[in-house]
Amino acid sequence: MPPFVVVAVTATLSGFDQNLMRAAASLGARPVEAVFRVMLPLIAPGVASGALFAFVTSFDEVVVALFISGSEQRTLPRQMWSGVRETLSPTIAAVAALLIVFSTLFLATIQWLQRRAELQKVRRDG
Image 1: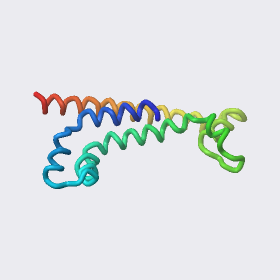
Image 2: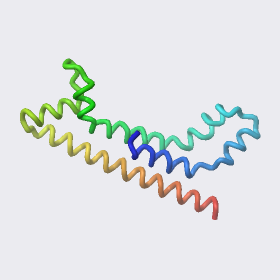
Image 3: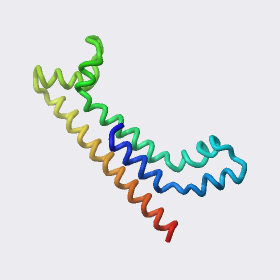
Image 4: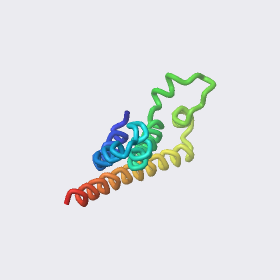
């Protein structure tokens, strides 16, 4: 699991109030029901950003794509690798630039979620 995923999900979970789960249990909710109705909606942004980071970082796995995929499968990392090896085209540079922009945006989103979780914790505790 990439560290970005761990950071995103951990930041969200650190801001989650366990008293909400206890309150759901005291109102008669089973543990699984409490997770799906209380916990999951509150941590969904962190889980979603972690999933997006995992998706974006999967594009960096050129070595894995080269060794695992068959000759008939043309994944994006493999296509980029062959494009760089054979001819340097502007398409490869554009895709690389987009990946950098998306990665930066996702990192900014995680930082924002961390700050938001910390502020909510300070407001709740203070």
